[in-house]
Image 1 (cartoon, one colour):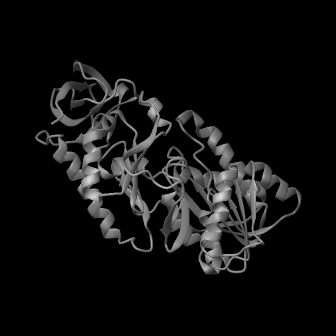
Image 2 (cartoon, one colour):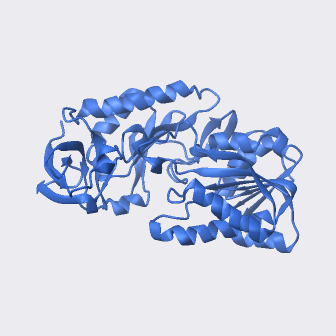
Length: 401
């Protein structure tokens, strides 16, 4: 059992977020620290009158000073606790009944599954784990044992290499944590479409699992059949392969990575499609869109799925300018009645703000834009109501005239 090594007393009037069960406690709310808790240790959080509020893991190096785990004073944070939370996440994913058509999806979604800082993704017989906080790092051995017992994978890859690790005072880790190493290219299925993924070297945990439902929604036959599709920030094919599966006439994949585009082309071939008409362009997305605009190139459907633009609050104005410019360029390339599927995965950009940015782009492009569907992350990436930050992916499917 992990021992509680300290007590944190909040400043007067700063207990609201804890009472509302938000799992983050920032340093500015803390009035006094008793004991000598180290990074990753368990601490109790008390209100200004000394009453118990919650238990969580401490990190003196992070602005998020405590990641809250339990609001029950009697709950023990031990191996049974971690196993119970993982078992609950396992049960919830089983209820989705994604297999056998889909063999890659999220098993544990950090705070939204009551496990702040822990992400576990399934890729066929292999799992990818991310330890993103000091609290998870301190209990990683216990957690790995439980993960192996519950899911019994062939191997577990650890991809603890996200930027947030530096803010937690933790080093980057990329390794095979247990079992067998995965093949260099592991083939998974998503809604029956085959994708090759690189678990040790790919983006995130290897693939953008959170876009699964959106790929289906955007690339329905009525949207893509016999259409000319531009897939921007294509990575390893994603939306483009769904468009091909549903009858797209021609697909242009744009990404900054030659290696990702090479894998995208292999994924097309992997599914038995022969597509000499498709294009794969490596380069800066903004430059390529400007080139298309200047040469009067037009598309029937454009997908914009950029990486995170806002990593901190100070990045938000810059991110909004980037999103606006990107969408402004895309809107100029659409045929009348064409469709734009546009996304932001920046958690600091709300859906409301993203819609305002899109509005500004539409005005500047002099295009009439209707939102015909709002889009978000899949059900294996649940959103916890007490943690609105877990609703990070937002998108709009728009008709443009």
